[in-house]
Length: 127
Length: 355
Image (cartoon, rainbow over all chains, first blue to last red; front, side, top):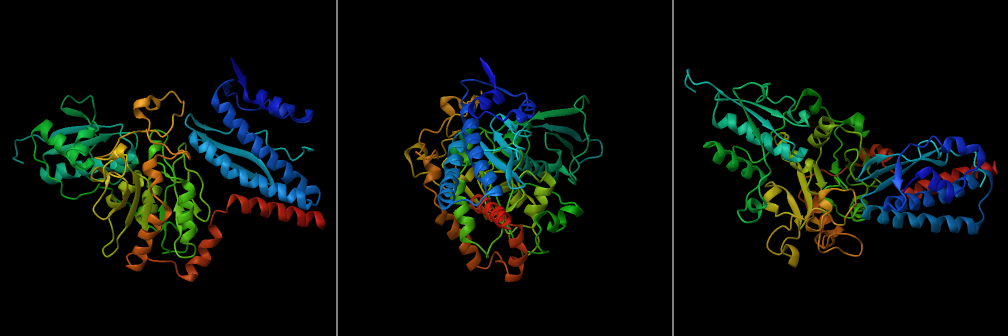
């Protein structure tokens, strides 16, 4: 069985309706549902998704001390994420534009793939 | 060569990795040094840039019946482990034996020829002021031999130790695993082979696993009175005699562990990558992996081992530290720490919200 990454992530993090058309523009890469790469990508998306929630909030409101502290804690997870990915020969680097993660460079043993080329242009997201 | 003797036409075919192609360039050079005018040589390979400006190549066709196609094979592990050969001497003895020749190694390094552009200081690429000393740094490598990778967090400790004194330029080719370092000039995925040659040409040294830049350090002609250093973080995969050059500092751990007690283990991968590559099979996997997923032979190597070597170069004045003026220019081009970059973004967003 194969499942598109877009579908998998849509299930994990439902996108606002107005973004669904752009989600469908994701590269047509398909991965096995039980492929470990799906987990790697899910971990990565999870991290940067959450990071974007902080970055989005910071654009419109003053972060409370507890939010700032939570952000710090979240950033510490990056080392853990890197370590996890490097075990699998994967290297992920975010592209940050206008204060948000808009793209990820994703290098893995199977080649280079930018799964979020279109989809992380998400300044409009209300989180 | 006597007048009536026809020059032999040899076309070397090779799918070697680029680093090993550099060693092949030494063989081509020494065929001509040992037998002047007796050979016409050419190389068919995936990295023709290695051979730019090389005076020993003449275009040959595989279809020409006079051309002998030599499919250069990688030497056996026995050559390295038991006979103590270097990659260079392995190639040479193999060729001499196969063709009943007596080619002598004239210089113990590859043979890269510089063009005018290679000789220019890479000020534009690096953003450094003309003549600023820098080191090349490599934080990973190709996915075939992951046992060669060290921990990039430890490499970061080395970089941070030399803050304001040594600038590192990080390189790495697209598609390979080269985790980003902070406080370096990040030229990963931005340099082709010739640009890398230019970068190495002007570097004080190279800090790397066993890699292509390691071979370049000596293969690129050195200016008189200048030494280009190389520190190779090698672990226990290969015996140092097989890949190192006389002035290189090899940090290896052969002999320190049962799995590489007598010589290199020649394993390929630390953990399986599940990419359907033959190197994922158990015989190619490291048998001694730490909890942090480093081969134990690499885990034995600590940042202070590397730091001490560079400190020695600085103390011995064989490598130049930055001047304060050079540091001022250089620091504006350094890659930020991820953590700091995000906090900087948040801070600037918050400032805008307040206003």
